[in-house]
Image (tube, rainbow, N blue to C red; front, side, top):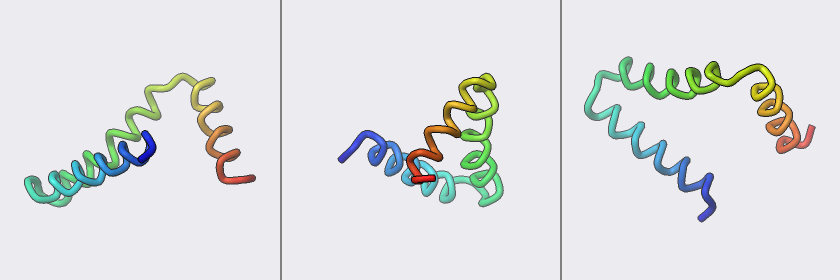
Length: 60
């Protein structure tokens, strides 16, 4: 299993646990808010690089 697949499986597991222990809206805010905060913490050059890599992987 690749490194990214392990991260994805872990994220799904944490998301399911949050949905069980917290109200759905709190779990949703955490699941959406953490990646959004991480993206906003990047400086502009890192954001451009991330968008460029993502487009290349999509074959655009």
